[in-house]
Image 1 (cartoon, protein in one colour):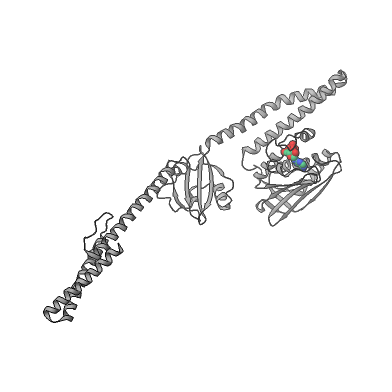
Image 2 (cartoon, rainbow, N blue to C red):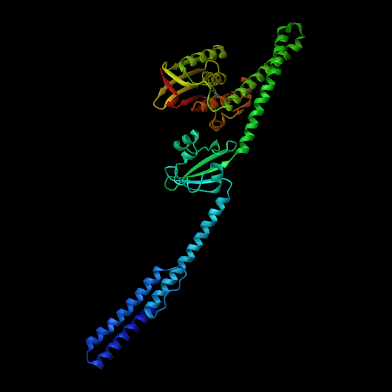
Length: 432
Ligand code: ADP
């Protein structure tokens, strides 16, 4: 190709020179003949340039280039080839983009792209159905203006997207959606929204079933336990063989009652997001009362100390907080040998308020810690049956803390003891 245009250029120059020489020979004015030749060549070159400019200006992708000879012909052809290649690449890219858009449009899940400030950039068809986003009106709008739920705003602004968020759809209360946000590129956000109505309904059915069964079992069990107590009061009238059986029946009846009470409490905690009574609760007074209950449970076998900030108050439900802290303290008593020391603490700092229960008991292996707050999870079933626990204590603690925007931190060394700390954010703290 290079050779071609070099040859053409040389040919043109040689022709120009030969023509000028011939004209000079005929006219005797070599200089004027050369000027004339050069002017003619310049005029021709300018005309080709104008044709090129004209072609480029109206350049439709497939318009044929002007025809020309020599160097200019080469230039036109090369430009035309470049243009065709560019067109082919653009068509291929457009096909890829179309396929991606078609496949995301076919998705049942909503896909939404947001910029670093949370303004809508692009979304698929499902986003319109699930969230009611409209093209093009909503483009550039902040997502928090369109999904106006306070929990979504909180979730989006906290920027901690490890766990997904579940909410009802803003356009259809009966749809339940799961929001999952991922950061990408230059702090942009990719938001995936799934319809989890069915899973939500199943979960609700499970909760209702457990709550209903627990409720229905309560009355018959109360009657059975009541009669067992009456029989126990007259145990001397029975054959001694039956006395042990009666005692065991009463003990197991008591365990079942505790289990039902815990299941009902969990069902109640799950039914709403926040406690209905949101009063300031004096932590020192609450811990003092739990301390004396724990002393009674321990039968004075453990040393239970208390150190709490007398000024500290937490916003929340006293009954729920009592239940959570009692579970932690009673566990410390249950899982500590006699003469073990248990420390209750309550304090506040710049991070919020903290309540901790430290024991020098059996401790827990690290592998159990992440699963400890699951329902019925037990480190060692023989340990649990001795203590008569229901396996729901820490699940209740976790739920109560969630409802008070708090979290549970567990540190433990087998054989050394455990520390359970409840961390409350500053927003929950009230100072006297
Ligand atoms: P349980 O009613 O069985 O005590 P929990 O949910 O309260 O159920 O506790 C779950 C498990 O965690 C218990 O079975 C026990 O093995 C372990 N655990 C809880 N608290 C302590 C503690 N202070 N020391 C050692 N193990 C503990």
